[in-house]
Amino acid sequence: MPSQGRNGTDTGATASRLRHAWLRRGPLALLLWPLSLLFRTLVALRALLYRLGWLRAERMPVPVVIVGNVIAGGAGKTPVVMAVARHLRARGWRVGVVSRGYGRHTDDCREVLPDSDPREVGDEPALIRRSTGVPVFVARRRAEAARALLAAHPATQVIVCDDGLQHLALARDVEICVFDDRGIGNGWLLPAGPLREPWPRDCDLVLHSGERPAFAGGFTATRQLATYAVANDGTRTPLASLAGRPVTALAAIARPEAFFEMLRAQGIEPERTIALPDHHDFVDWQDDLPADHLLLCTEKDAVKLWRQAPRALAVPLLFEPSDAFLAALDAKLSSTDGHQAA
Image (cartoon, rainbow, N blue to C red; front, top):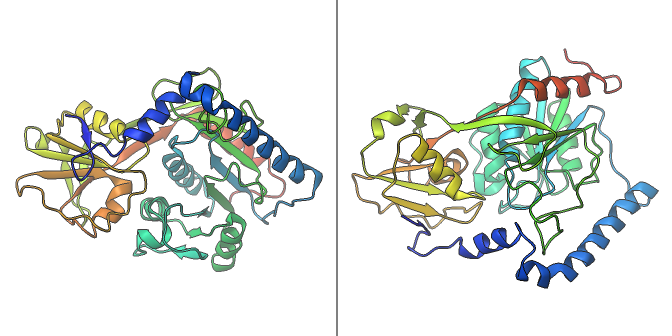
């Protein structure tokens, strides 16, 4: 059935129409094109001020790996951040993560702890902390978060920055630009297209997070849902055992339908799907679903939803960058001046 909002209406209709408009140079995109020229000018001016030194980027005493994207609307950065953090830790690096904490209700610099309220630190930082176990700090200015992380965890050897490609105030040693299957859309900048800055641009590594890269070049990854769902207490339930049972699937991510499609690929056919805006806080959520209905959600949603609906089951996303990408990342980091893994 169609994706629905919590009240039964399609709350993602407007965002869906805009994303569709960004895929081609149709009437709506043409109407917005003059504004995109203004946006392009502002982006270029800001970059020029940094190149001239009128605005300064702050450099950390350890390597900084930026994971970001040039396309709006979510391209799969958070799974990449978690995969990079796990890989570097396995390679012997002591890793920390910084983020703005988009969507949180606070505005300060703070550490994300295992029991932090996602509404105070952001759902993605909470998920990164829970999933990887590495130190995570959030602040409006990523450089402030990086300084606080190093002060609290001075043994940190590398910092991974979640969504900081356009945050030029933080100097970086390695840039990873992430694309999903949309590629660069219609190739125009916001608001006529999906681009936050012109492409192509210089960056160290390009990673395609989807199944069908929209353009050649860069590295690939595999992504699929796990074959199990996770309860609030960590208990795992095989998805195969849920087939045929009444299921409501919920997603408050950039592209909820992608989650619903992956569930169907695992043999789970939801009787109802609920699509909510990305970073929805669930503060007003009431679990009034029928008692026999299972509630399946993404891991990102679960860190908030479990406070309101503890019976919800999260289905993890298994994301694995190619070995070639990880080898290229290792090579980039090993060449950073004066920094080596332990």
